[in-house]
Amino acid sequence: MIGWLRNLLEIARQTLLLLAANRFVWVFGVAALVAAVALALVARQAAQRGAPGDEFFGVVLYLVGIQFALPVAVVYLGVVAIHGDLQDRTATYLFVRPLHRSAILLGKWLGVVAAGVGLGAVGVVVTYAALALPPIPWARGVTPPLAMAITFLQASTLAAVAYAAVAALLAAFFRRPLVAGAVFVVGWEAIGSMAPPQAGVRSLTVADPVRRWLASEIQATGPLREVLAMRLDRFVDPSELRDPLASLAWLAGVALLLALWIYTGREYDSRVRE
Image (cartoon, rainbow, N blue to C red; front, side, top):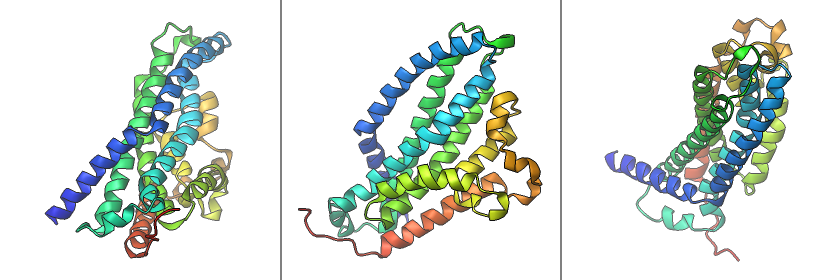
């Protein structure tokens, strides 16, 4: 057991180092800095039109960061980390070593989680710095609160864990997991998270429980409240919906168990890639 855990942690460390050197991560960082400069300019215009800092900060960070940038980044990195070895057939060399496949997959998953948490933190910190530090004339003098930034950081961490588990399942099962990942993030997340609660499919998304958790933690007003509190939920007793943290844990756990079952039992193609 100790050897298995040591292998898992070493694979997680190596995965994180490889992902840190990935071009996508550096492009993401540069894009975040450029977006921060542009956001500060847009924020001044929004403030002059009467927008308070907390609402503007929350709406931008949720719609751009939590709903779009973070899912795309984590799913992409998860597919690259896990399926890359399967695609170029180098995973065969890992399988013949005295390494259990479960340690390989879970180690890669932990590495992706660490990378996703790091990217989420960068996004939150850069957005907060761009909107809270410059002297922007926010309406009513309300600047983006630090407590809200911390809450969004917690939400991005929860989302990174769940999206990394989904990416592990897609990478272990599909031959073209990037396509499946795009369908999940752009298609299924949008459809499933906006379905009526009675349909019972919201638990199969990451976006809905993250949104509901944010809505319960942030006493939002104005446009931010409209974004976090969907109209469909206004006619539903909250007790009829599963606890958002329980939904995230259920989705991440099932996805990870299925990924382990597939990854440890499937015979992947070991032929040299042509």
